[in-house]
Amino acid sequence: MSDIDNGIVYLNGEFLPAGEAKISVLDRGFIFGDGVYEVIPVYGGHLFRLPHHLQRLDHSLEGIHMANPLAHNHWQAVLEQLVELNGGGDQSLYLQVTRGVAKRDHGFPPDTEPTVFAMSNPISAVPESLREGIAAATVEDFRWKLCHIKAIALLPNILLRQQAVEAGAEEAIMLRDGFVTEGAASNVFIVNNGVVLTPPKSNLLLPGVTRDLVVELCQQNGLPCVEGAISEMQLKEADEIWLTSSSREIIPVTRLDGLPVGDGRPGRGWQQLIALYQQYKQAFREGRVT
Ligand code: PDD
Image: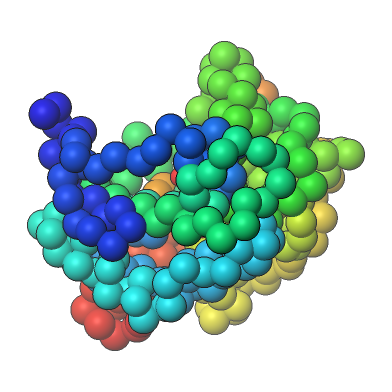
C-alpha cells in the first residue's frame, strides 16, 4: 500500500483503509461528476465551523435535488470518529456525496442509494511563503450559473487555475462581465481607501465559510466592510487583494497580472485581519468559541 492509501476513510457506513475503499465504476460521481463536496478544517481535533459547512452541504444537495443522506448529528459523529481514527490534531476533512451507482443515463435514476465518502488528512500550518503574498492572474469566468453549489465537477476551475499557473501566478481571479466573482478555489476581497469589499453572495460564486468569517470579524472589530460588486478596474486599482479559503485561510495577493498590488507587500488591512483570524482560531482551539 502506498502512503496515500494508508489513511482511514469513511465509505457508506464503514471505516476502512483508503486502499481498501472501493466504489463502482458506474458511480455517477465518476461517470458524470454528479455530486457535491465540502472541505472542513480541523484544529486540535475539533471541526472548525462545522454547522456552517453542513448548512452549505444542505444547500448544495438541495441545488442538485438530493436529500442529505445523513442528519447533521450523524455527520458530526461520523466526521469526529474519522478525525480520531486518523490521529486527531490538525487535519483537513473532505466529504463527498454522489447520486450513487446506476446505469449510465443523464436523467436521475429512481431509488438509487447515494454514495457517501469522507477522508481526512493531517495539515500543517499555512506556509509562511504564502503569507508573504502570492501572484494572481485575472481570467474570464466561463463556468456555469450555479457556482453557489459546491459541485465535485471542477473541470472549469481546474482549467482556469492552470491558465493562471501558466501565466506565472498561483491563483486565478475570475471576472464575469467585467466584475470579480471569485478565485479558482477561493473567495476574493479587496481593500480600497480603508474599506474592505467582497462580492455579494449570488449564484455566481461559492458562499465561502472563510469569507463569512472574515466579514464577521470585520463587523465585530469595527472595520468598514461592504458586500458589493467589484469591477475589473477596482480590482486593478485596489490597495490590497486577499483570497480566503478553508485550507489557506487569508492570503494576500501582492502581484496581479504581473503588476504590484499597492506597494507590492501584504497590506495593513491583511495584517489586521490575519491577526484577528488567528485569535479566533486560538479561541476555537481552547473551546472559547464554537
Ligand atoms: N475550496 N470558492 C471556490 C470555488 C472554492 O473552491 C472554495 C474552497 C472557496 C472558499 O470556500 P471556503 O472558505 O468555504 O473554503 C471559494 C476548497 C477549499 C477546495 O476545493 O479545496
